[in-house]
Amino acid sequence: MALFGGLSASSPWRKQATTLLIREDAAAKAIRSSKIAGFDLNDTLVSSKIGAPGYQVTVADWKLYSEDVVTRLRQLHEEQYKLVIFTNQGNIRTALDGKRAVAVKAYIDEFLKAVGVPILVMMATAKDKFRKPSGSMWTEVESKFNGGTKIDYKQSFYVGDAAGGPGEHSADDSEYAATVGVRFVHVRDYFKPPGASPAASAGRDQEPSGAGSVGGSPLAPSVERGLELGLSKEKPVVLVLVGAPGCGKSTFAQRLGPAVDRYGTTTTDEGKPWRRVCQDILQKKEYCLRASADVLRAGHSVVIDRTNYNREQREPWLDLAMIQRVSCHCLVFDVSADVCCARTVARTDHEGKLQGGSSVMVVRRLCKMLQPIAATESFDRVRVVRTTEDLEKEISFYTGAPAKKEEAKATGPGPSSVPSVTMTPPPARAATPVSQEKAPASEAKPSLEEPPTKRRKGGPGGVQQAMQAAAAAAEAASAAAGGGGGGARARAFPKCWRPPGLSLEEG
Image 1 (tube, one colour):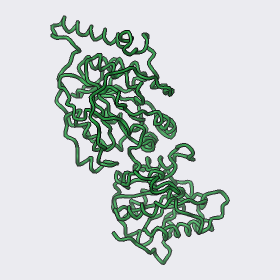
Image 2: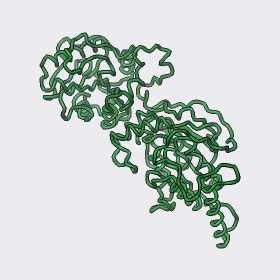
Image 3: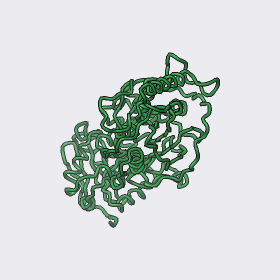
Image 4: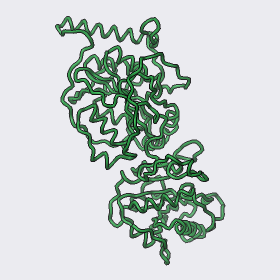
């Protein structure tokens, strides 16, 4: 697709509604694509003083956000994206031909001449249904300004500067993307920061459809091991999920098996060999530990659905696996804070009620507390999930169902390749250093009747003793009933089932 150097000689602006201005010249009208690259205007594509109360806007009042803007926009155009600017200019109100409207339109015209790429402009001028974060402007694009072509929301994305982070005025842009149902990409991740040299932005993901959407969390350096380790069909597994709220842990765990109550039981078996232990449901860590022990003694594998943000939070699950004589695996969800925030803002049915705009501060705090899996942590298998393809491979590994390769290629939001990893044997388990970071209440250390777990000095602590006693009682009961040999009771995995579809975009 060739670049369009010139813009329409006649005015490309028109009133679509009493509070909606549209700029569509002939070049922009000719672009029909299922892939939409949406952009905020101010502090995303340009830096300017438009919107400042009382400021007299002029045609010259703008500059590119960074030197990377033109390059990236032209790259998207060549890759068959339809480029759309979605901007709120509430000071115009209904005066669509007023002085301010004329000044803003002239300013945008000059910007588009500078970039030389056809771009559709959608401008909401009042606080009504068109104003972001309402998704009405996207609906207008799909129904009236894309030649009848339906939008593929999984391949489309939106770039903005307001995600509720430190120093940001709001989370409007991330909420907007969540409302529309497209990926949100922060401007600092998509464009080179203003004034940055090429070296400063080296290593940035250059894929326009996924840049900044996945990866780059504190969990990225996690050490992987045992990737091809086979699953025993006779013994259960403890699978520890690690990641911030909104990274996709619960959706993944739900595909493995049903959730349990405090006693390790569930209302439905569904023929699945896995049980999900979720702290959002059970509320306390000690309840999760006890339920997990019950699940393992019943012969089921257990997936631990909680943040498990540092080594101290993960260590009790290694203890549990050792006591029950089963393998302990770890699955790390390396998803950026911006993506996690967008998902938690959008969801409405979270089991722990961490949802809406108030969730952003909690998610960002937990993201800062995340610690990567160290080489000295004694997991038998560690895998980092960065793309939908990675996730489908893990579903296949733990269920035996074929990986959905075609779906993964279509919906994968990030790079398809995974960095090479070092295959190392699990190290000997050592004493756990105590984190100095204050844990959130939901992940606080358990306050059991017995003392917390003591590692390797003078024998096992209270949690271990309780679990060992329970295991011994179970063995005795099994022997009395003619159940045969010692060790925790185990059963063969039932036949695998084909789980429903899932992509990383589902939070």
